[in-house]
Length: 445
Image (cartoon, rainbow, N blue to C red; front, side):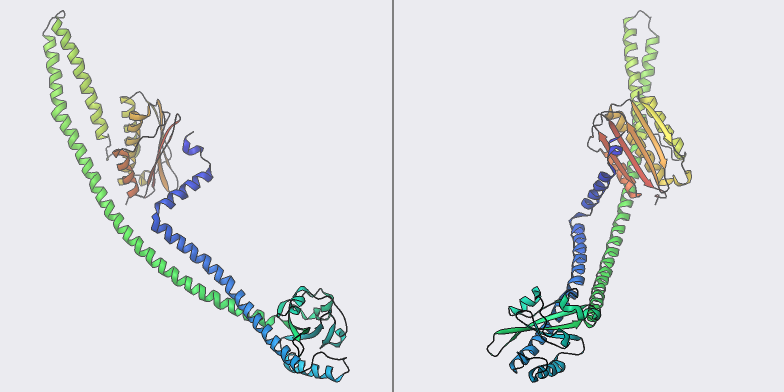
């Protein structure tokens, strides 16, 4: 089991998210934070503004009722007498003109001890109830309001009217002493309709603003994407030219080593063998020539092996499976490694062109790194194809120590990334190294 496969799925997701977060850079992170902050502010405004409007409407109603109550008190209509008295009738007429009607469905005048001194429904007059906390705050001198609790005995007659808002305003005598409180109960239908309109307009305005912001961000994203694509295409062209130049330079070096060193070395070996054959078997010079011949043959074998690795053994005219087998066979022949090759169900039609060359170069680089650094004895080369990607993995049982990326790995990574692919190397100390190259199906651009 490799280090990659042993990681929990949750940690893989967190690791991928962290990599993407680091990839977008400080400006990308600032833009993302700005978008999140804008959404938060939008939600807060959408909820807070209707609540603020509701508070202002109710405050305005409470102030209006308080001014009417003060007007009634200054005209000497409070305190009142029994329902049959002239003062009671005068108050009833004034309440009918200034308070009752429209949204107001009930008016009561309470004494400080909780007795209903006046009500538009005379069945309540003279009854005593416990004052609520909202009513007691009004007795302290400030207008208050709350949603009526229709389960209270004082609201038994209002229960058929549905949900109500009750306003309490203090009533003062000519000397300014609070002698009671007016309770005015209003329906919430008009308030709910107003708040619904406010909410609709607020969300419409916010939605319009967010839409415009989204359009602006989309235009910036499109512009940035176009610029990025232009730079990417330019980088692809430059990288393609670099890779071609590297291939040409590799072929030139291979040719030069073969012609300028390999062939003279072969002539030297031929001359040594010819000179040795002219001497008697007991001649000490013959023994020295045999030793020099063996050294020269070892040098020739090493040179040919290095030239084979340098050239890569990649024949672009062969199919992908055949080329991959050739790379593996060469590595088997030139090393003591036991190499297993597993080829899944592959669609040859999608493994061609640059995708094929990139994967073969990646395979050769991975196997070469195993031979040079891993101190492994067993390697598994596996090629799989899923619905949307090709994956090449090379896993060994070596020491698993991650070394700095060399030029070969960097070049292969850039080659894969230009085709939309990736390279990932995971080393686990004492448990081997996993090399994985992935490229999208149809990634040859």
